[in-house]
Amino acid sequence: EVQLVESGGGLVQPGGSLRLSCAASGFTFSSYEMNWVRQAPGKGLEWVSYISSSGSTIYYADSVKGRFTISRDNAKNSLYLQMNNLRADDTAVYYCAREGLGMGFDYWGQGTLVTVSS
Amino acid sequence: SSELTQDPAVSVALGQRVRITCQGDSLRSYYASWYQQKPGQAPVVVIYGKNNRPSGIPDRFSGSSSGNTASLTITGAQAEDEADYYCNSRDRSGNRVFGGGTKLTVL
Image (cartoon, rainbow over all chains, first blue to last red; front, side, top):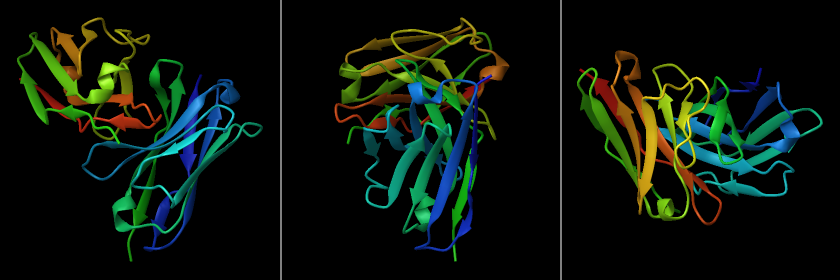
């Protein structure tokens, strides 16, 4: 069974940092592209970042470029999102999502809440 | 960056057909995927590619595309279909993008 489990969310002050993790199981992690997607309270889905299966190709949404860093460790079946210089508008539930080949985001984690507030 | 536009809200009578649309320039080059999200839950993909349903998704869900518009059609809407629906695609730069979402009410 495919499972994606996010962790690392919490309350952080503006300007602070947080590192999210996503533990993957039930599939060959190193074969799949992965993404982070967030959802602010009461708002829609917002794509945050993409990483290729090998980690060699990375994309970011303009809203996080220069502040967030996506990475992965295929040996540990884990995806990460390092978030620096956090702002109030980064407050959201952050989901990791597997991207199946031509299948869209076919599996999602349960999400982890990040709250940026003083 | 590209954008995908959806109607904020749509309603449908129980058992009737409803179409939810998604517009954007990137849809001329890339297929959309569609996601259903119920309150407090993670999104679930219901349609991907040209018109593909993942295992477990009822066949009342279907997808189509023409020009810069992708559509999700529910034929014979059920009460359990009441949810938020999002389209998603990518642009030539590789960036992924979501539409703003459509809240579907089943009357």
